[in-house]
Image (cartoon, rainbow, N blue to C red; front, side, top):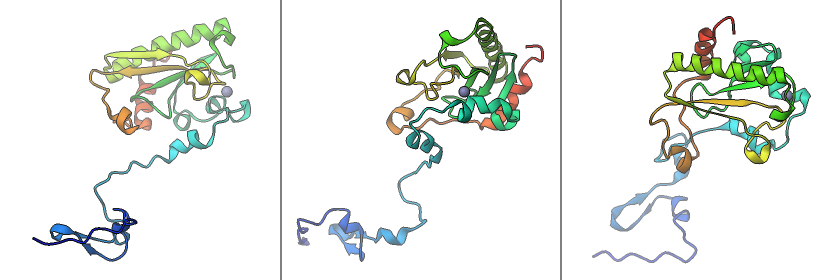
Length: 205
Ligand SMILES: [Zn+2]
């Protein structure tokens, strides 16, 4: 039986992964991980630089740099807008919970539902109904989560500009991946979904 030398107290598994290749018990050789640049290892990495928006910027936008105020001044494709009403408009969420996750926003920079005018409330409601019909027709979803997070404490990412979420749901669309890995798999690209929903939107709405 081969006798192995006990590791020094300061020798951690990580120390053993640096420096020259070393032989461990059982004939297993540990290679220098520094030689592994660009070589796939056992870990999959999901690069999410867009999340830095949340990490770096805890500040709420002012009207001048509010994404929901700026979006209507851009073209629909670039702003991910699918429909424009008189008082409110509909766009894809840049950070969707599911494919086809829409937001209905008033054009005015108001924070909470009680600040919206009667006309804005009515159009947010009617645009929400049309969005549901279009999503049902284009994506054959089985249900929806619809709602508003009012205030940052309630989960609103951009709390200063009112927006209603419309999240289409399918049977078996949820799993433990978001919980154990902090990751949500979105099977379709935003541009493709935007075009599909915009083309399915009735002209008279
Ligand atoms: Zn705004």
